Every structure is written in C-alpha cells, then in structure tokens.
Image (cartoon, rainbow, N blue to C red; front, side, top):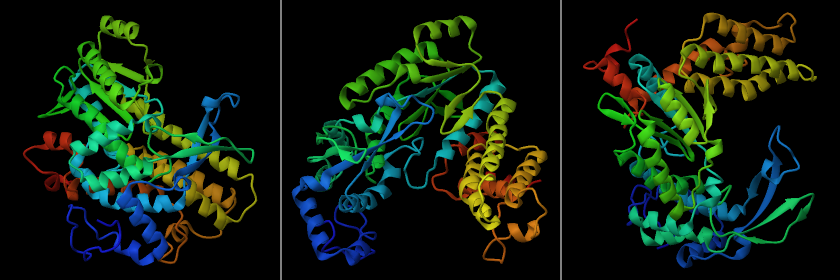
Length: 460
C-alpha cells in the first residue's frame, strides 16, 4: 500500500475506506525523490533521524518573570518535508473525525468551531438562571497536555477505533526517533531525545490529541455519578476544545470525587495531568455550607465573578457577561487605536491595520457571545475606528464609500453594525443547514417545540 503512488481515481475511495481525492494533487506536484521518500516512510515506518529533528525556539510569556524557564513558550520548528508527509495523513484522517469524536469536542474537527461551545454554554447559563439550579463550572487546566501524551496509549486508542494497521504504522513513523535542539542566542543545545507527546508544529498533532482525549470524555459522559445540566432530554456535562475542558456540574459534592478518580485513572495510562491550582471554578445557587466544603476540599482557583474559557469571560450574570466582554473589547480597541496613532503611516495603511488586527477580535466576540449590545456600543466603536483612520481629522472620503467592499469599488472599512448582523446570520445559518446540527441548537429546539427553527426565523 503506497502513500501516494498507484492511487485510485479521484472519486474512488481507497480499499481501507480512506478517501483519496485529496492526494492526487500532491502526487502531481511532488518531485519523484520526495514521492519515493514518502512511500518509503509509509512502507517501513521509520524515518531518517534528520527528518524528525526539531529546533525549539522560546518566546517569553507577556507579563511573566523572564528569569524563570517556565515563563517561556517553546515553539518547535519541524522539517518541511515531514510536515508535508503529515499533511497527507491529515487529509486521510480529518474526514473521519466527526464520526469518531462526539460533537462536544469542537477543536480541529471538520464542521465544528470553538464558538459552538461558548454559545451552548450561554444557553446553559440562561437555563440555570431560569430554574435557579445549583451549578458549578469547572475549567480544567492540563499540564503540558500535548507534550505528555503516552505513545503506547495513543497506539491502543487507534487500534480500538479500528484504524487500519498500515495507517497506524504510517502515523507512528513520525514518532520513530524524534529529537530536538533548543536554539538560544544563535547557538543550538545538545540533542534531546523525545519519548512522549505529540509534535509541536505538526498538522497531525491536534487530530491525534482529540482521538486520545475521547476515551476520557466518553467515560465522563457515561458515568452516572457525574451529574451534568439537564436541558430537555439532553444532559450536558462536558465541552472540549482540544485540551481546554469545561465541565458543567449540578451536584458537585458527589460528582467531583468520581471526576477526580477518572482523571487519575486516565492520567496513569495517558500521562495526562491536571494542574489543580490553575483549574478555575465558578459556582451559582450552591448553599454556603456546600460551597465552603468544596473550597476547603479542592484547591481550585475559585472565582467570584467569572472564569475564562476560550478567550471569553464567563459569568452567570448577563449584564456582567456583557460588560466583561463587550465593554472590555471596546476599551481594548480604543487603547490599540491610540497606540497605533503614534506611528506615521498612510490612511490606507490604517484601514489595512483595522481589517487585519481589529476586525478579527470584533468578529470573534460577535460569534462567540451573541448578545444584543446597546445601539450606542456600535456608534462608539465605529467612531473610534473612523477617528483612528482619519487621525481625528475631517474625512476625505465618505463612510459609505469607505465601508463598501473592494469588489464593489470601496475600501472595505469594517462597518461594525453590519458585521454584527452578518456574524449572527452566519451563526444562525450553521444551526439551520449543518448536519448534524451544532449542540448549541438543542436547548433552543427544546424551548420552541413543537415548532422548528425554520418556522420562527422569519417572525419579527
């Protein structure tokens, strides 16, 4: 079985069930020598040491003590040839992941995105507020999650999921003899042998990690001693984005001991470890006695107002949720515009900066936290952007022309009100046309039953 050569036609699946429509273009573009190399890697499961050697550069974490090694973020630079080989395997694996990994894991899975979990969490918070139900949000902090993964455990997971043995061997070619050297001040350290963990910078790593974490997620979902939030017929216990795990528990007194038991058992076989001190916890409607017991028993980072999940500050209060995210974003953009205004570059350059650096932050908040801001919010935000572009001077070009798309003859300056509507329509569209539908739609379906979302979407 060859990784690239002797491929079936584009529309035909391979004999092992993996579609080959993605790889013929690779074969057309790769040199014969690279093609021979990849077939050798696929057939023999071993790679020359120089292909698996990584150079690690370190980037200091903002606001942390630079004299401590733990305050540097290591970035691995891999061989480009081996990344191309890994990308070929990704193209085979990615279409299968939605069928193997439950939809509350949204990280690096086709057809899913992080905002699915934040919108679902927003619906859960609303349900908890309506019912005054006790709830504990627990954001688990994994220690060096990608770097600790046990290869033997990963191999067993792939076997359990019935992956063909040739494909598993092809994957573990990337882990046959990996090494790394740390690059610092232009000098390379001695070679370090790597014995566990997925490769940083490898396109295959996030997919493998999602598969390796699925047994833990499945066990938590199936354990009756861990009680989640009940919304209609569905129970929500866990939300994942790669190694970012958020638990929603209604009976933490009885649920947490069993949860920690499962985490300990999983850690023994996978090397996955939870940093208890950095695990954030936020509670509501718990009795003072229960809350004091939990705080004395579990050394979490107990939060009084909010916890952080996927860059969103989560609170049980809607006004607080709005102020912590939308209000903070407005302040951050004002500060960014003030700093950039100190530099001399053209107004066209400032429009480009706005589209590249400001707009993505705005759109993420709009998609991840779809609430209705006050109209004054849009006016203030748009005024801040416009004043930055024109440096508080009279505009040379009307806003209508500036905000028109480039294709239609404008300059594409963000129109935040229209961007907000577009973000909400895109979110709504994913709930109407995606198959299967995202999990965040389930609470909505329960609340409007027996009507469908398509029945009411056109009402005022």
